[in-house]
Length: 60
Length: 391
Image (cartoon, one colour):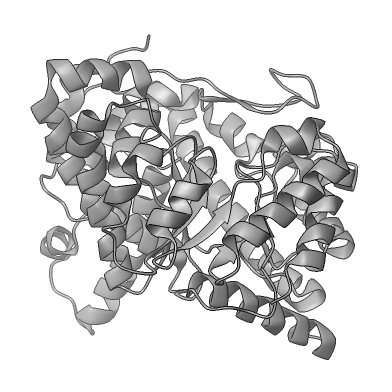
């Protein structure tokens, strides 16, 4: 039917609405000089949009 | 919003919400689940509404100008064919490309998820969908990391945002200029349908029920919070109108009652109860025949669903679910396509006489109204509902 495209998952047991958890990104960002909550909120908002896009192809 | 249209919007909304809350509004609300019929009415080909968002949206302007509807289901085509071309999605075939310009879209079902994918899916479904499912489904993504694949991801996400943005703007216009009220404002699915529709397909899931039932149950368990989240995310915070849940494989006899009770119902019940606990009602769009399951459905919290009747026994639905949930539907689509207006009028009158007396009833066709419905029959539904549906 289709070519085999199986990759190992990067994350396990992620909650709904999350593609790349903020906690992971926070570790990679290093020092945050301003308010981390602003950055977290915006990260999670766009992450949720990506999540909905991915699931949109399944939820029909 | 013009004063008269605002008044009309509020009247219709009040009528629609009252019925869903099991109250008796001034009139039986009319909510027609119209799809391809709308294109025909507006003079557009199906290719035009599938491919051109502006025409898909404009067709509703014409509908709202000509017909007195209390709630509408939105632009007739859910799927933007151009976006599907951009990513090379294989499961839908559209008018004007693979099909004649006026042929209804077709769903090409395959088991895009293989039996050996269950473990990865259960571990992280979001990542599995992106890394494994989409490259199988989207021809443009068949070589992940390639130029074509990267471009298709950009186009796909941008396309979804464009479509959602245009739809939101359209809803504001329909409300302000036509008094148009949404029939629903979110979408989700039964977990079993998520697994059995686009992922494993009917033939795949039927084998799984016998060969790997525990994997199926584990996947359904994983899907429950995702389907709750998806419903709430697509609602955008709107809580007055219901969430649309088209129900597929739970129709009798896709599954036998034992399979239904074991595999279909528990996860669906949890999704609906969770949505209701958050304040979101479900439009339980029971496609096909759900008669054997009415007693189980009655276990749901009062008013948590609107039970839509397609081929379910209407009298039994009223007896078992009436007074607990609002009922809708049941006008046969075959009658709308091939019947005469007098037959339609008689059917609508009988529905109102027998099932709408206590309130909690919404006029609609049994299933989504496609291009085969006749104009005079749609008009007959509305005229009869307005004539006989006054409380």
